[in-house]
Length: 344
Image (cartoon, rainbow, N blue to C red; front, side, top):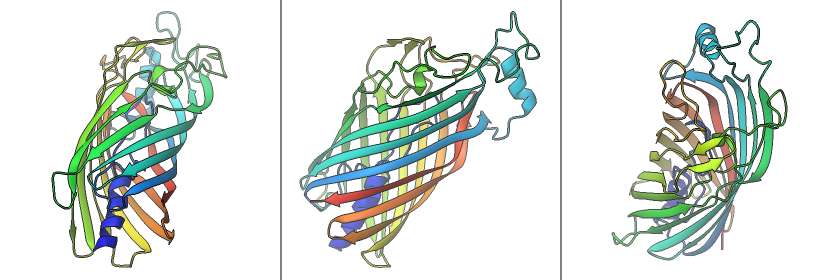
């Protein structure tokens, strides 16, 4: 039973929804967390470390809940002055350092981002037409590397004798850059969109709760978190900006019937992001709604493999099962996360 609890604690920690990356859209940030020590169910006390890599390639346009917007709709948006993005690829390496006691724990997450972005740009409908300024002739590209926004998260699990339920509280710090510019195309030298910067420029609070259980060789969990920016609107080169709130719910199971070495897992990741605020936030030219909100659901199969002692490796693939975004946004066809975890 003790090894089952340890294995399940890995599942729950991996499944924590977190928005530790800046996002101009609802789907820019990875919804898997490798904060292994902050979920409050681990029976392994002491220090642990985790190193993960997340890959998100946003190359599929979605308008609202329409996963196949027509070329005519996209052309209409462009003709009325809306920016038409073509690709955003984000790769994030996150180092996490955790300490757990029997009833409390703390985790430090340090992300490093590599993000490339391309846009067809937008035109001035008062003076231009798509025929005179075709899509792709006035856009830009960017590529940036750097530290993202650091997160410090604590947990308390003293509400139950077996420490399977508890509270989560933390803070996201504005350590990521907010000064990147477009590097190629006609937009080169101008400020990159606020939501595509390595950081949001805001200090955010994180609150959540979780519960979990074991049924024979199966473990289950449910967790909810909320993230809210407490900073005022930040003055950036592209305008004022504050990220929207993020609400997330995760649930999942793991199967320990194959023994302690290999553990299959399955998660359902739900996230709702409210609209960003400020003059730097673009709006839909047809509806006036901000181009930044969304509700998404992912089904995420994965596996954890214990190599030896306190070392384990893991991998997840997130497959979208529901996407409803504000206006026209790019979403990924899938996201992938791999990592290694070490207890001491």
